[in-house]
Length: 167
Image 1 (cartoon, rainbow, N blue to C red):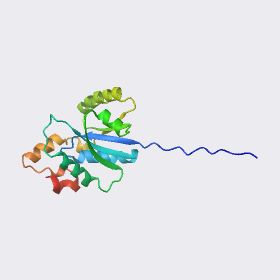
Image 2 (cartoon, one colour):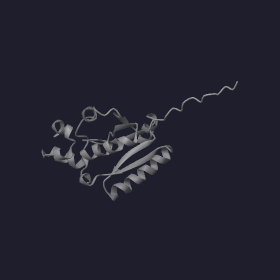
Image 3 (cartoon, one colour):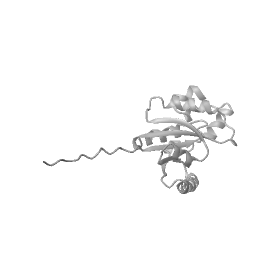
Image 4 (cartoon, rainbow, N blue to C red):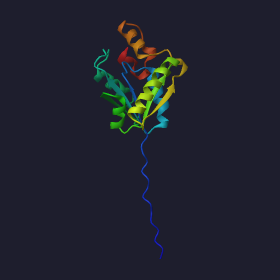
């Protein structure tokens, strides 16, 4: 009698990506990148990096609250905050991918350098670049923050779901 051994099923490794940023505030451009990246990953962690040298408009708690509101209907998106090196944070989350948005060639040069440094620090980490949709290339958190600080109308630069909560 021949006994056939069954191989245990292979466990699928989750494709986890981290999308780091200050998200002060999260813009429609950030939101677009996460939505476009969702089909590629099992989980995306939108991670607020904390920099003690930076002055923020919104508290960390408020930014986490806004991310929770924005992605409440998307089970594949988590939100978190971290301090320290992004590469180290990715390692603690078992993330093998880092999401970054590119609005211009200047962004590419800067992000390329950061990607190469992250690769040196965490050889298994791959940076995935998303080119911004043309209608969002001029939008940055810095500019949106300035509009809000100066009592301008920033609603068109914010995800629709957050417009009444921010601007």
